[in-house]
Amino acid sequence: MTEKTPSEIMNFFVFNTTLGQAEGTEHEKIMFYYPESDNIDKQSRHVGLSEAIVHFAGTFAPDRPCEIVQTLKSRRAFFQPEDNFWMMMTVSIPFSEIVSKDGSKIVYHNDEVQNQALQSILILSYKLYRLFNGPMSKTFNESVESCRDHLAHFFPRFISAIKLSHPDLQDILQGIRFLPLGRHYFLKVQHIINLIEANFRSGLDLDNTQILYGYLTTNLLPGYQEAENIKDQNNKDLKSVLLNLDVQGKFITGPTELGHAATIGKIPRVFIVKDGKWEAFAVIVYKLFDAVLCMLVKYDAICPTNSRTIDFFRKLDKFIGPQVKQLTFDIAEQNINNRRLLLSEMQYRFIYFNHMNCAFKSSIYPKINQPAIIGPDLMRLFCDIHSEFDKTKGNDEFMAKTATDCWIVGKATDQRELFVAHNVKNASLLDINDEMKKLTSTIFGNIFYFNG
Image (tube, rainbow, N blue to C red):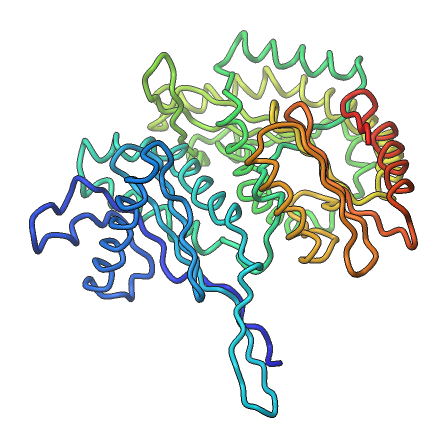
């Protein structure tokens, strides 16, 4: 067997069904198309075929838009983010060539492309686009060409970051990692949040919090941290830094030096619905050691930047600096206790997700942005189980044993999901059931019950 050819993005495009109604103007429907190397006739054919599939599928289920079309060599994923707008992505199916005495043949590995993973890519791309640009229809109604420009600016960068080689449940769930805190420390954090909310703009719905958290942890913070590591690679160790009471926090988005207005860099802008209207807000990110504070303030209050802007940042730093510094010391102390708990968790391979607050907890991903420590075959099984849970939308349970003697367990209850891989040789179903009860009682307490 030859080496397997990986899955690749064949095309990715956005089109609007209200445009290009006259014969010969079909290409006007295209709002964005990747790759640019495809000529306009090829782009128009792909968009026309996709629109025909959407209309055909709609005659059978008007209330359920088409999502996936599968062929031997490719998989098409559809998503309708807004009225008259459609997004479509086509990926190739991985294949390998098998050579035998009778000749050679191509074998396609359809099970390695996860439908839900493709759907999650389209949904996430739209949510990110909407967060930083507002709804497509808003820009479209103002100017069609302006909408095309916004799409052309955003999507190429997103497409370049798509990972198709291995499906990942973490990317599908888009969960938020909550830091375990004792009651005393939690009340301290809540107190600081209440103080900030009383003096500055704050508050965000769960959906936007989830997307903004993903942007911060996978894009903004890693890039900033890498630059800081290079700059501070010869600095003192963390313990000596913590003892330095003169250390100051830094604005990741905002001025690098509070004494100079010219050091204010580009401040990210996001769009949030407030009182039924889309409004622009500036994303202010403040960092002191491992504590990161993210705030939203009215964009027109600080942009375009002027003397008022630097005064705002000075006031903000003076207000939150002492609060965040003390909080950092408290969190560092709490993290020492959390490391002991982490050691007990590492004996299990699990993923936990709570749909009500998007809480994500896992021993499979030791740190944010690190790859899973289980193989792609087990991860595909987790994704398949999650897909089934997503269809049933209720309480469900799944247990299976792989050819490598690994037990896979999935449990969905009360809008919570738990996925576990047990590498226990010669274990029976009863043994695994006991292990699951032990895991849930040790790690989750009264949050998640396993009544196998």
